[in-house]
Amino acid sequence: MTTDEPDAVTSDTPITAPPEDACDPSTDDQCDPLGDGLLCTPCESNSDCADGECVEDARGVGFCSSRCDYFGETICPRWYYCKQFGDTPKDFFCSPLSGVCEDDGTDCSSCKSDDDYDDGLFCYEPLGDIRFCVRSCALNADCPEQYSALACGDVEDESVETPLCMPKALGVPTPKCGALPLGFCEPCETPGQCATGLCINSPNVGQVCSSHCTKNQDCPAGTSCVQQACLPPLAYGCQGFLSCLGVNCPAGEECYHGFCLDGP
Image (cartoon, rainbow, N blue to C red; front, side, top):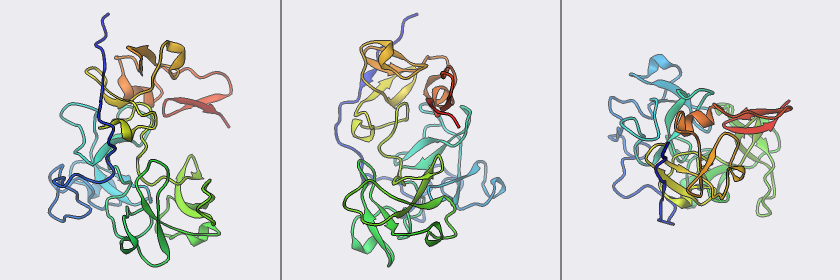
């Protein structure tokens, strides 16, 4: 079987702000890039969404979205990305790259200056990610009660002297509200968006973050080295890989989003 060679995306400029002509519902009430009031409409359940599903942003606040693919008619609009929300290839929905739909000056809102956040917060820029509003804390109770996904935790950053209220990843507070840097097999527009610095355009998989390789052993379990870039099998692509299809973990480890991690 012949596999088409993936093309490397050559631009090294990361997208750190929406393009000037981008439709951004967080700042434009008339913006509706997916139509029918679907994308980023606040919701509490699926019944609140026109034809989509209610999913949570980085703060744990519900918003309406729709299922997406990495390429084709169901690709997400620019400044959004196809995010994994569950354990199957169907559990991918369009989500803002910034992590939240509404930049309201509170926790996890993107920020550029001192005028972009409420009193008691400050603008924090983790490595490679979009700057966001954050607050200091000592206990989980110091984090806003209405934001269920936030918890108090330490950061490995000498510029920050206190713990911060941050979104939980695998139950652990992590300084990452937005999607950047994107991980292996997540859809990308430029190399600067990827943690590996490699964004490839494969006609069979889509435009995704990959990693350099010279042999299959250099690649994550369940993927192969194709023209010096790691890619999953064409049968299920990146969305299947991130759902752990074809990933066989050794004893004592469990698959999470395509990667084998230490089990409980």
